[in-house]
Amino acid sequence: MRRVPGPCAHWSDQDADFIREILDLVGDKWSVLIVGTLSDGPVRYSDLACAIPGISQRMLTLTLKRLQRSGLVDRTAYAEVPPRVEYSLTGLGNSLLTTVLELAAWSADRHDEIRHHQRTYDTRNA
Image (cartoon, rainbow, N blue to C red; front, side):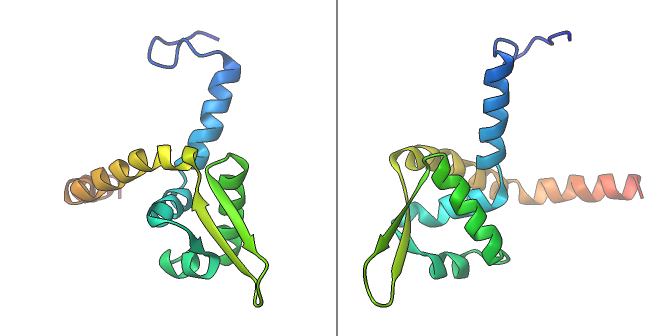
């Protein structure tokens, strides 16, 4: 396979696969919203569910597990009655936070321009 010059050209196939895996995780809309929601500190599962409109319990659980697996989120269970579980960003998760917040700000700042291009494209391709 021919390699095209660019920023990814120097990565091995193994590195490229890993980078795609991580970008799939951190670029997922639910991951971005969860990381952003955890930016102010630990949050209980039910509060996370309320803070992220449209996320199903299944998707919240799956995404939290994926973020935990990659070391971005910690889960702390407290031995209380009733049981209490909180999620928080790890140091690694906090290092991602700046990028996530910048991406969200970029999206918000360019909302009107992007919508204009989407409408133009949709009109031309209808």
